[in-house]
Image (cartoon, rainbow, N blue to C red; front, top):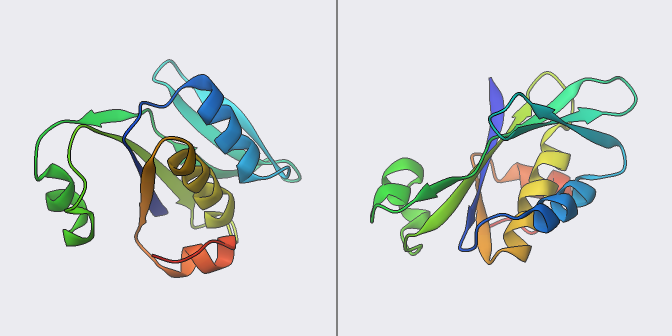
Length: 130
């Protein structure tokens, strides 16, 4: 299982915004690619444990699809929207902190917002809850 969040972006992610989001995740983590699919692995520098997986962006173009998948709180977002899923490990304490910091920075830079399945994540990451 994982602690899930989704960056919902009006602008397509680019290398500069992803690098800034990775920097925002914190100095205590490092990043590596996962195969050829565009996914990224965020790992803890001390123990080397994977704290989060960032999936490759997906362009959502179907009206109503975001609401169907995530609920009425995202109904105001009109496609096209770039969907970037971030899965924080439940096995690593506070793994949601760098994961949510990554997603939040990406959404700040690319005119978006972050959906997450537990409002407590924002408090632990030092961010404003929705």
